[in-house]
Image (cartoon, rainbow, N blue to C red; front, side):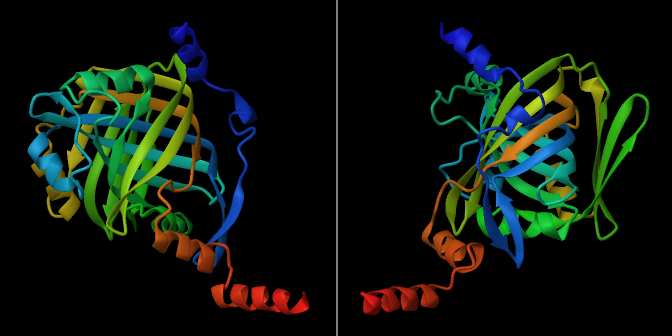
Length: 297
C-alpha cells in the first residue's frame, strides 16, 4: 500500500499542472519585484556525483548539525549540478551548484544506507557550498532571502551530438568544465532537493522541487568528464576535496520544470528584511498608521 502511494506521489507531471495550486506572493529584492516561490517553466540540467573524503567535506560545512552522507566509510559525495534555465520568474540564466551530500536527518546515518534511501525516494539533502549564476537578478534575491552562496560568473553550455558541456569561469579565470554524455532519458520523476544553507550563522532550509520530464541515470564513469582549473580558489578546493575525477553517478535531465520555495527558517533578521525591503513596508510608517487608526476610533 505504502509503495503504491509513493509511486503515485513521485510520478512526473505534464505541463502546467506541476505549478497548479501553488500560490505565489510578490516580494522585493534590491528594488525589483520577485515572485516566491519561483517557477522555472523550462530548463535542462546535468548532475554528477564524485567521491570525496569525508574529512575534506566536513571542512566545507559551516555547522556540525550538517553531517555529510557516507557512501562507504570515510567516503562521501560532492555533487556538481549545471542548470540552464530558459524560462523563469527572474528571467533566463545559467547556474552551477557545488553541493555536499548530507544525511537525511530522519534516516539512520549508516554508510551507504542513508544515501540509498534518499535515492529510492528521490528526496535529496544537499548543502550548497558555491552557487555561481550569470545574472544580477538571479544573484540578489537568492542572497537576500535565503543566504544562497551566489556570485556572478560566466557559465557556458555547448552541445555536440553526443555530449552536453558546461564550463565555468570567473573573470576569465577557468574553474571547471563538466561534460555529460547525452544518454537515453526514458524516465520521468518528481525529485525533491531539501536544500541546506547557512544564513546569519544559522542553518537555513529551502525546498527545490523538480519535475524531471525526461530523466536518465548512469553509473558508468565514462559518461562524465570533469576538467578542473589550476589557479582559481574553487578549482583548488575541488582538487583538494575530490578523491578522483571519475563520477560515481550521473543524472541527465534534458527537460525539467522546477519550483523553488522560499526560506523555511524565518530568523529575526530575515523577518526584518522582509518587512522593510521585501514587502516594501516601512516599519515606522506602520507604527504611525496604527496610532492614526487608534485616534480615528
